[in-house]
Amino acid sequence: MTDHAIAVVTDIEGTTTALSFVKDGLFPYARTHLPAYVTTHQTLPEVRSILDETAQLSSKDASDVGALVAQLLTWIDEDRKIAPLKTLQGLIWAEGYAKGELKGHVYPDAAQALQQWHAAGIGLYIYSSGSVASQKLLFGESDQGDLTPLLSSYFDTLTGAKLESRSYDLIAEKIGLPSSKLLFLSDHLGELDAARAAGWHTAWLNRDGQTQSPESPHPAFTDFSTIDPGALTGSPT
Image (tube, rainbow, N blue to C red; front, side, top):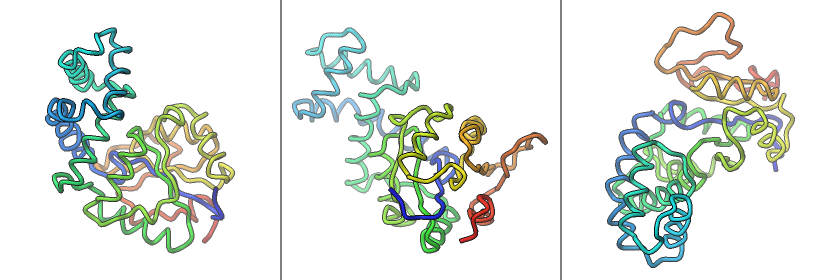
């Protein structure tokens, strides 16, 4: 997939983007607009497919749109990572971005670093629990401008769970670089542990300045400004 000598794969929530944007912005927006969106668009094939899948997973009547909407809202309240819900949220967010009611949040330091790393020939990728479609929307309609030209590809949990090292093996295969040439950035130590177990280099985005365990193998950074992917991977660019 890549001609790059090294690559950076970054998480989104708490890493490039404030946790509050997703928790207090995207999720409430989707919940508020979900009933009207489904009612208005229920005859569209992609929405009908979401409703049919929701009915199968919940054992509800596929013709009872009200009951299916209630089930989707319950899954939101339970913070369930269920495929039809994630797909529907992505459609609602796409409409919100198109209307100008949503703007993706990206920390200025993250945007600047991504621009610098891209200019230096470093491959840049995203790995997030949010769908690939929602990732593209966030970076394409961000408050730092359209950042998608900087990004080579995107990965979500269809590739694998972020706490499983096998997921990072698969991403390395898809990128086409050995794990020793890959750097993963995240605010979640469990994800970093999984990447490290797969042979990746790691960096902990510790934006809140939490105390780090002395035995932690992950270098800690409060923002992107002092991260040097070449130094961390032992591959000067």
